[in-house]
Length: 178
Image 1 (tube, rainbow, N blue to C red):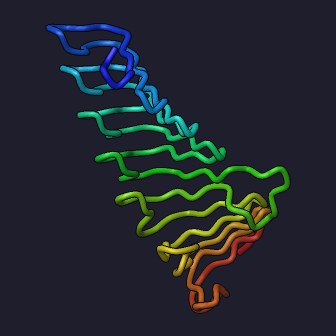
Image 2: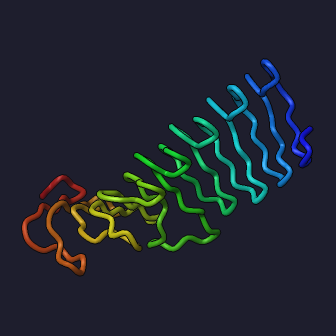
């Protein structure tokens, strides 16, 4: 037991946390996992008092490597972390509502840097449609390169600035025709 009320239960080596252990912090957060020389190192689960939960790799007390963050609102991120941030390839799944609208996002897959998606990505909607292209850094894709529709039809090619087919492209019908 620490002076601040934090409690550690688990393996020790030379007077420091080392091996498998569980730390309950004074603020209500809990870490259960591997320790090395007194720091979170290896596989573990960190649960925040607000209900968020991370399961994955830790390096020097930080989320680093592969992991999944389960947010209290029901959304989640699965992918790579670096220095505690979403960094690398990953998928963010939006929380499902009781009555999702067809144009509500189901998930967005792409490359993350410092917690933000950058570059090419794919957004999949609850109605089964999807858009692929360059993420605009705000609400969606600014340069669409492909879209798929719930009926199995799809289009790959150029779009205008309003998102309409424009220029060179190929439309694929569900019966295989182009």
